[in-house]
Length: 55
Image (cartoon, rainbow, N blue to C red; front, side, top):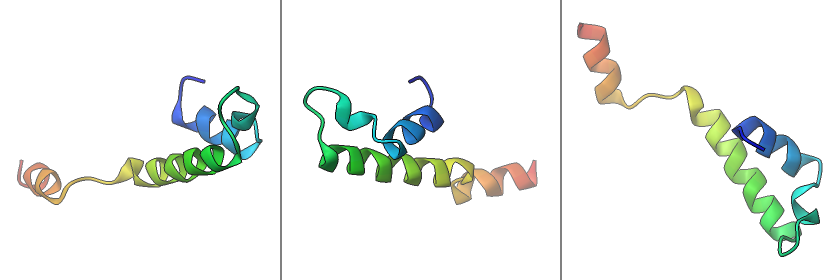
């Protein structure tokens, strides 16, 4: 896995818990974090957006 999308897909498909030391709880936490990062990928800080809009 090299991208957030690949990590998200692996967690959704249950492959994370197949790794030694990772269980269903860890897999769920990774899935939730991946979803949050993917949803926030297109967000900008207000200060950056304001600076870009005046340029």
